[in-house]
Amino acid sequence: CAPPSTEAHIREILHEVEGFDASTLAPHQGAVLTEAILAAEPEPGHVVERCHHAGADCTQLLLSNGMRVVLKQTDFLDDEIVFSAQAAGGYGELPPEHWRDGQMATALARELGAFGMHRADFNQLLAGKRASLSSSISMYRREIRGECSPVDLDLCFKLLHVLFTADRSHLPTADGGRRRFSRLDALLKLTRDQVANQYRDPRPGFKKRMLQLCYGDHPFFAHLTVDDVDRLDLDFALNFFERAFCRPAEFTLCVSGALPSVDETVALLERYVASIPPVRATASFPLGSAPGGSGGGGGGELFAPFPALTNVKDLLADVTPRSAHEVMVRPMVDDLSTVQICLHIATVAGDDAVEKGLSHMLALQVLNTKLNECLRFDLSKIYNVGISSDFGYHPATHAPLQRGLTLVQFTCAPEHADMLAREALVVLERAKSDGDFVVDADTKAAVEIFRRSYENYQTDNSYWVEAFCAAFMSRRYKGSVGDTHVEYDRRRNALFSLFDAAALRESMRMYYPGCANGTAGGDATRDDAEGGEEQAVEVRFSRTLAPMVVGILKPTSHLWVKAKAVLRFGATALVVTGALAAVGVVVLRARRR
Image (cartoon, rainbow, N blue to C red; front, top):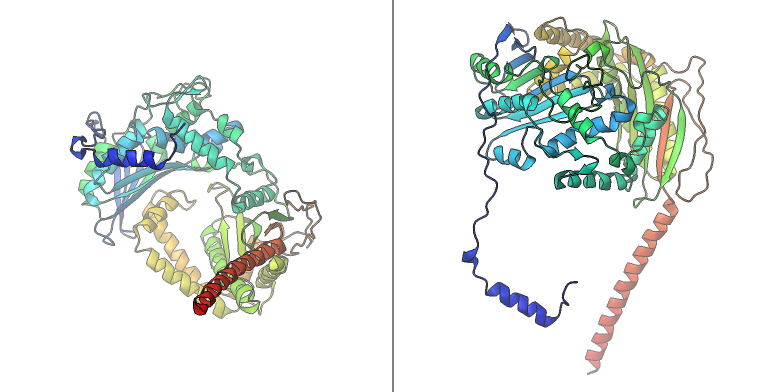
């Protein structure tokens, strides 16, 4: 045990420190990175196709390994280049028992060395350079994103090459179920701690519960537990990471910024990106039951390819939207409730998908204004309310049905939560059916705000990267990303001139058709207070906007929270009163003397 902290002991330590000769300390010897990013210069590839699109002022390339590339030179910032490489397919392609492994694949690879070197060495390599590159795998998409200064563009292309080709076999991994290296132990311990404490803040649990209600307790939204972390198959996860980034032909690389001349950029691409092999030749980790490995159904290939964009599997395709109303009660510090209303979106996406999508975005902007007018200014019960749509839980495929969620969320005092939820639904219903509630002046203001925001966003390199990536994955894409983008701009401007109050109501009826019989059923709701009694909560649904899920997060007892605040104030007042009394006694004694 530690020695007692006596005065003599502390003086002894101070004496040793004061008498220490600092000149005997050797300089810090950090790890010296002597190896190059690439062990040897690769054999350059070449450009198979090249064309310039005047409408979007960009150059489109097809490399010899199948990767598609779009280059756009801009002068927004003279020291910024932004790029993104995206591909269809993510961990949603895995069987359900390996979803957790797929979710952890990127974190494991990043911690152990996604570029074939330890993370500390990689950070040292980038010291003093303005260059970054990261990878991610989501439900339906894989992405490589980064940015750099023009002088470090070759470094980023080298890192892109290494990501697809690096030998990671020397990195620490699982060995018979036991972790051999402290780096893995640290990562897994951090993950366990995060999982164990994930719901100390009740808001993430509330969000997870809302998704469970929206999608019928689908196993994808099951709560992550510490046991799930302990059951992770690390070799499977790392193999899946290599499979996700082993075929350059599945990716589209979009680059925008202060690029050098097109010829210079193409030369760098041919040297470091086109030279990536069409498919990875070796696996860094034991294949075992890894996807596409031996016994994994790879058809003789080391890693099975991901499906094409139009064949990406929708994990939630068989889920039937339902209506529910639930109140979650959790111990909270603040006397504050969160209300969230989730409305299912379902519309046929045909040739007019651009007009439908833009009309819905403009409708949400008008609705946001109307919700603030009602809940914030007329009722004066909230500070702010937000409404947005989320299509991330369904793949952006060419399927005829477009599905997603519209979310209305705000915070308020617990005693006002139910009333405000009803008022929010009234606003949405009136926008859909009441011709006097939303007028043309409202829609024109929304169009003007959207137009100005869009024009400002076009002066950002990130906009062009996202726009080109979206064009490649669009059903409108016919081989020319420039023509696709120009067509989008033409149809957007045409819609701006036609969008009015009647168009908004038509968009609302299209995206939120409601029940066929004009009514909505509901599930029994519950009070989730820890240690509290289960009780029924009145189910309230909109007749014209269902199916929907209404969730309210409340503190365990807001009256008790207020009582505690009063007690704290009273205790503080007593302390201050006692201190003042003591000062008064001292003053009186001084005067008597």
